[in-house]
Length: 183
Length: 190
Image (cartoon, rainbow over all chains, first blue to last red; front, top):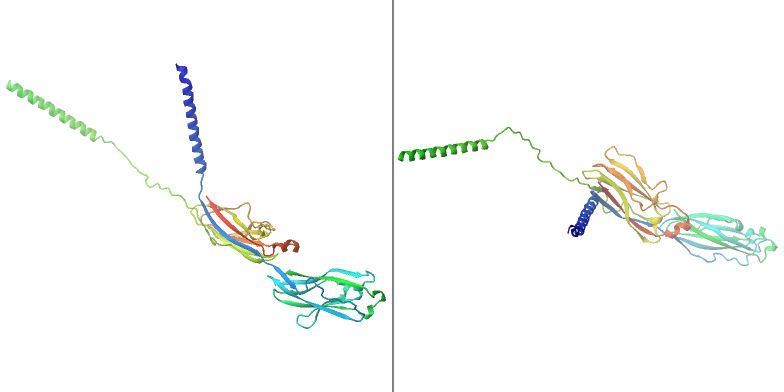
């Protein structure tokens, strides 16, 4: 008879053990979650950072400024363009050579022609650069504020002294670029 | 017989009286069960929870904003954090709600340096850099920055220095007109 009761006692003991373990688990959990500490919070939202922009308008962007076909020794031709500052900042501008192509390569017409760059903004020519077209690399011109404009004149001269029969029919293509850097 | 009855009745009365007196005596003895005593008390053992709070000189507002930034620009802003509670607290700074308002993400470009100046208790301390290294770190403080323990009443000013690094035109030009916002959160715990 006593053997009959043993499984029941075991079940009861197991149940008790489980109950104790469950209680311990609950106690431990409450210990973990009661590991609370006082806190205090504040926030500084809306710190906004915005980049500005810089741009300019070239009145002859992508176009030929000066086409000097049939230029003869002793002759000069010129063309002008206007740069208008844009964006949020004043910028310092540079005119630089992008490419120079002479046909034929030798003798080079660019070595015979004189290039002069003048600032004509006030109506009075202020020379920015002058020399053999072949030696032009870049020149720093002016600072242009947003909305302000400056006019530049490009003059090509074929000095008589540089006239060489071999240059008859020669041509050159000079590509220039304006670059503004914010200040 | 009459006399016997009287005597017997008298004796019974005496016994009863004696018992009553004895009872009274015992009760007096019990009631006066006095001995020497000495008593003292410790009342008013009061337990009050501490209060951990802090003040933020720009609560709910921006520390700094900068518009029309260009490469090389530096923006500064300060905020003062004070332990206004009555127990010390450990302070932590982190960020939230990093938002790109206009792409590309300026948060991956702008750098921040954070400087700490102890204001209280006096004397005012020297400004020391607590975040960002020599070239700064990305504007999002990740991971959170532990600022240390503030005593009661201790006050610190934090200066945020945000820089738009000067790169190459090819690198910087795509960021024209880009915009971002960030929130800085201060948490103290005891």
